[in-house]
Length: 490
Image 1 (cartoon, one colour):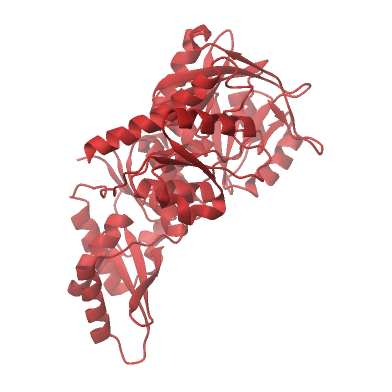
Image 2 (cartoon, one colour):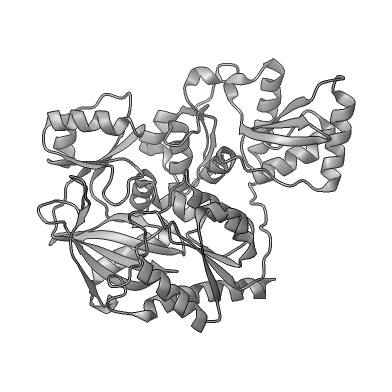
């Protein structure tokens, strides 16, 4: 049996249960190398799963380590976004009958707690199983309100600390039984049309595709018999009219782009970027763990936690000076600071910890440019050299009222140095089979992966400078391939 660990915010939370070495704190799990084995099973019982909390990072890094985690980041985000499920008539009928008979007259509110898909109420066991399959989590709270009929009004991730004596017994029994079983993933639904929605935000200052590129996608789609519409974030209710989704808006987990990707994935629509890629790529902590766990060279890095002692001199001894500090989900060089002394470090830490409970400290690797390798379904499509902004250490310079960027050079993939290409393809393969932009630095002594972008720039006049229309066609052909493969499967 693989290693099983129960992660709690502090060991006092586990006081009502039997003491065991398998119960560990979130900080121990995040920072101790012994818990990185890929065959591990993790039950995350932290009380706070909000974005950037320690509970969130435990689930995020478990996924990066190849461990089976409950709840997953996808479950956390779906519950946080208020996602509900449609129950079949049989389950609904049993729920209505039980609640109408069990509730006292005049009461119109009821909450059931579900432990690993189990409930003490036999009449609601099918409901518990359905909810668990939709939102796999150790503790679920499902809230019902009565209007004309009983309806689910909310789903929450329950807290270990809130359980009463009887609920503690039910939880421990469910935990003991479930730890002997195999985890399953629910099946997805179907769809069968050949229309492509491209999600854009006309108000975005730095979109991943400029207007010229969007026009190219539309033109090339017509040649492939794909009907294309550009849709905006306010049109999520239209998404299921389409057969596939291409996100050309900068992605983030707590953002409309993730909601679009979730909805598409739930309905088995080919989607680029898919929800898992968004989760993995938009967080540098996850990527660092994923890449290092799979022996991909990255800059030397250390995770820093709010509330833990910080020693600037020790970090410099380990990583060198200056230090680069990053929030986990910054983009376009935002949320990244270079510090050259202890005073700058202190100021930066205060600013960055106000945004995230975890920060990455990283060695500074000066280069004249960064490589960007565009990868789609394991194949390198394009290659660019992004030059640093004039007089600045990054590609983008956000100082002042305007954003300045360096130049670029687009080159043929076959002219990319082999170590750069090899590292890019390996890094992308660890994330998935979607469209990625892998950023790398190459020095005389090494090639290191900086990050993998799930929503890479495809701009007319930049990334397409070598391939031209073929770049757009190859991306669209991947949608066609996925649509046809789904059709054959059904």
